[in-house]
Length: 184
Image (cartoon, rainbow, N blue to C red):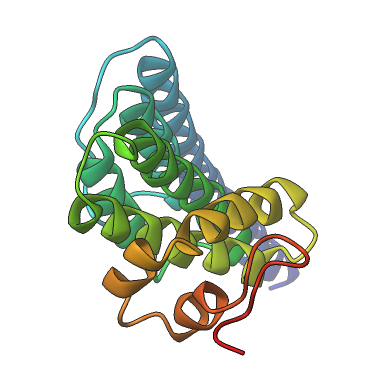
């Protein structure tokens, strides 16, 4: 009787070990596939991802897309990882998107009409705010937000940022100390 009980326990332990091996093998296979995808992205090869892919893959593809000036596609990657990723991982991609919007706004600032510049400034400010909510100590995001805010001090830009109350309030504040603050 004791031999049967011992054999049953040994068989149960064997089944648990086999199931654990299968589970760990599948996890290892998934990790290897994710690493291979990230390696292809790093090598410059674009790769479509399923919506439920690991958030790290979405962030990696988003960075790849930003490097290739595909801002709209990078925004789609950020949207795909919204519910899945921790805020700090999203902040990495949001920071890149904000920089892309600000860079584009600065590129066209002197040559384009304000109706083209203002939405890019608003997008950059919005993304920087999200980054700063996730990481208040991100000094690069603070600096770039200040640059975007400096551009939005321009009354022409502020007029187009109608949905951004903070930008409208900042536009009313003079930039230079001692500058007149309206009529006497």
